Length: 71
Image 1 (cartoon, rainbow, N blue to C red):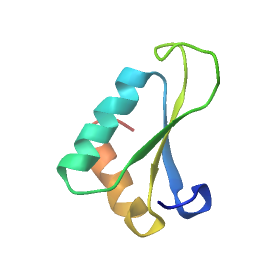
Image 2: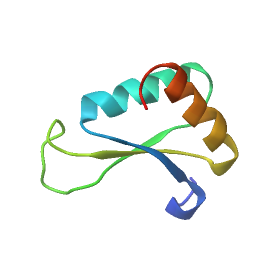
Image 3: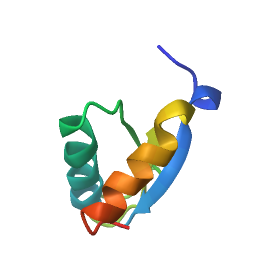
């Protein structure tokens, strides 16, 4: 598995639900996605999530999120 240094954060989602929606959009297009909660001990809907992709896919992934009204 890739380590954290090999993933690039392209979006900060305001809840687990929002992060999962971004993940679904990107995965549907074949982009590898990793979600990481920002805070420990905070519920999913009250937490922020980093939406991460591989650096080579970052530009395309961000454009996909923009096209789908996520960003």
